[in-house]
Length: 259
Image 1 (cartoon, rainbow, N blue to C red):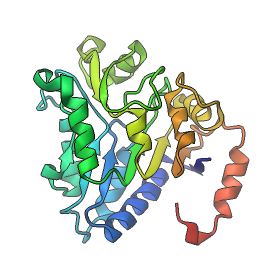
Image 2 (image 1 turned 90 degrees about the vertical axis):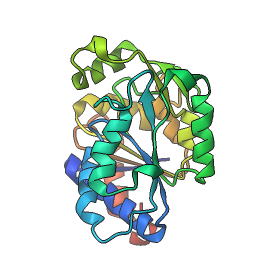
Image 3 (image 1 turned 135 degrees about the vertical axis):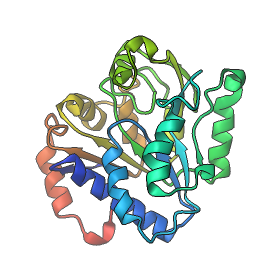
Image 4 (image 1 turned 45 degrees about the horizontal axis):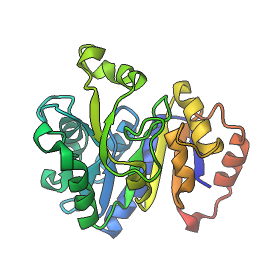
C-alpha cells in the first residue's frame, strides 16, 4: 500500500519531497531523478533551490517523463524547454545529463526504444516525481494504457489537451501526440512520489489510492509498486475515505523509517 501524506499546502508538500531528494543526492551524487513537468511539481523544484546550496549536483542525472511529438525542442512549451527553464537552470544541474524523450518525427519510430535503453544504461531511476491528471493519467498514459507499457507514442485525449491548453495560445495548438514513459517504465523506478493539489484532483487521487487497480485509471498502477509516497494537500485529500487513518499512521511513524 502507498504511504499517504496529507499536508496543509502545496508548499509543505514541496518541502517534504525536496528534503528527500537532497538526502538522496547527498548520499549518491550521481543519483537518477525522474522529472515531471506541469504545475504540480513546481513547489518541489522551488523548495530544492535553497536546499541544494552547497550540495554537489554536477553528476545528478535526470529523465523527463514525456515530450510532445513534432514540437521544436526550442519551443517554449516543449518539455525540453520546460525542464531546462524550471529545473536544470534554477538547480544548477548539468544539462548534458538531463534527457527528455526525442519527439522528432524523423526518429520517432524507435525513439521509445532509445529512451528505454538510455534509462537502463543509467542504472534506472532512483526517485520518480509524478503528478496525476484529472483523467487519472500519469505521464501521458491515458485511460486504457497497459500496466506493462514502456516508452511509446500516445494520442492525447481531448480532456488532456484541454487541460494543457493554458500553456498554448489555444487548444488547437496543443500537439495531438506525445512520447511518454510507459506505466511499466514508471513502475520500474525505485521510489515513486505522486503529488496532487486542489479539489480538481481529489477524485483522481481517491481512485488511484483507494479504488480498484484498473487501466481505466492509470494512476491506480501505483498500488502495484513497493515504495510509493503520495503527498497531497487537504483539498486533494477530500475524497479519501481513510484520510484519518493516513494522518494517524504518518503522525506515529517511526522516524528511522524515513519516507
